[in-house]
Image (cartoon, rainbow, N blue to C red; front, side, top):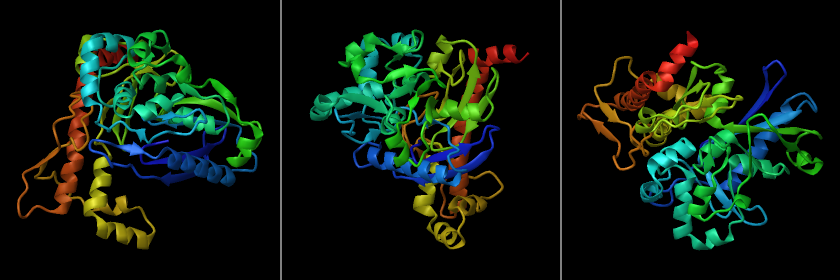
Length: 402
């Protein structure tokens, strides 16, 4: 489950892909600083792709299912399990002031040592405070607080469960005790009963009941395993199974996700806003160095400046991105881009500085702009990689690989 779409993939026991399905859905920017997903639209899309992928696989072949879900996105649900509002995603900036004031009051270093994360507007902890103060009617009706992992698990007819890796991204989770933090819940005004059970990735969450299985086009007896935050799930799929390896993912968010064998919390990592939390393999940990602008910048360019390529792609039945990227010049762009078209990611956690394009002339071309936009994100990721290499994680990874 991602921020731009969802995908279901059926693998056989050897790891080969047998079928897949994908469906897009839009992000809503209807409110100043806001960025939300329509929960019902996402869940319906998830059901559609599961049905489609299962139908294209050998009959009754599906035996187990796990959910990989985008980090931070969450909603509040009523006693009947219905979402009460849109899911606020990472780039939703409305809680910026709450991240600062709560972080100052609770102690930024205390939060880091407890949760593995430094305060920033992207995390549900601060968005919950915003909802509490700005949407009191929704807050009063909220029976549960779920990310998409729990929302979809519930739709599958199973008691909702969240992975340790995704629970960590809420900043409500004590990463050393591997449980919800009572101190943080008390400070926000939440109870444990409002949150799902937290389990390590790969744990059995339950077996899909027959009625739900039929609705999703699945055979009886399908097991649901706890999945995880999408980045460490993707890193596992890319083969990051030993310390010293990392995945570089290009998606809505551009991200570097390494794995290491010990929980590492240090002053240099904290200063660079490089978190530490549970990986998708037992007794391993990870961090994420990322740009929230990331692949959003390519989609934004496509939507605003590439209508001819999109029209041609429709007529040819190909991806518009193939045509758009083919138009880029080989040489570096004469333009320079500061890639803060969404709030920045690591290392700066800067929500105030806007994106910028520098060096524009009357002769500047669309293709030069496109190349500069992608270069800006690439430079931001390179900065993060340099910090990772020189950090405690990088030094430890070098020792572990040796």
